[in-house]
Length: 192
Ligand SMILES: CC(C)(COP(=O)(O)OP(=O)(O)OC[C@H]1O[C@@H](n2cnc3c(N)ncnc32)[C@H](O)[C@@H]1OP(=O)(O)O)[C@@H](O)C(=O)NCCC(=O)NCCS
Image (cartoon, rainbow, N blue to C red; front, side, top):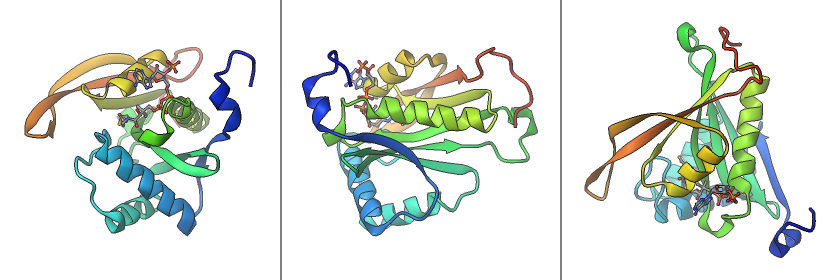
C-alpha cells in the first residue's frame, strides 16, 4: 500500500489463490453467491440466467474434479467474491500443447473496481507460466466492456472476431478472441 492507493483500499484485504482441495461449505456458498450475483448482473461466463444454487454447487465441485482445469478464486476480506479457470489442452492435442485457456473469469458486482480481476488474471498467467505454457488464449463477448478493457490493459492481443459467438436476450452477439505470449523471450516451443 502506498500514498497513491485510493483510501478505501486500505480498509480491505485482497487475496487470490488456486483451489487445491475441496472447498469448505462457507467458501462454496460464497463462491456460488458471487457467481449468482455476476450472472444476474449480465454474466459473461456462459450462464445467461442463474441456474440455481444446487446447480452452481455441482458445477464448482465438478470443476475441481476435471484434470485439465485449475480453479482460482479471489477473496475480499477473506470471503470468495470471484473466480477464474486455467484450462490446459487435452493430451491428444499435441499440436497446441503450448497453449492454455483462461476461462470463466468473474468478480461479483459488490467486489468490483478493487483490482481483484487484475490480480486473478495475473495469478492464472503465473500458474500457466509455471506449467510451461507459452500462450494464454481467451475469448469474451463484445458486450463485456470491462473485461475487454482489463485484458487489453494487461497486454492481450485481439486476433479475431467471431460474428456468431453468443445468444443473449434474443440477440446474436460477436465474440472477441485474444492471446498473450507468456514467456519473456516470446519464443514458442512445444510446451510442457
Ligand atoms: C471484468 C471483471 C472481471 C472486472 O472485475 P474487477 O475486479 O472490477 O476489475 P479490476 O478492478 O481488477 O480492474 C482491472 C482493470 O480492468 C478494467 N476495468 C475494470 N472494470 C472496468 C469498467 N467497468 N470499465 C472499464 N474498464 C474496466 C480497467 O482497465 C481496470 O484497470 P484500472 O483500474 O487500472 O483502470 C468484472 O467486471 C466482471 O466480472 N464482469 C462480468 C464477467 C466478465 O465479463 N468476465 C470476463 C469474461 S468471461
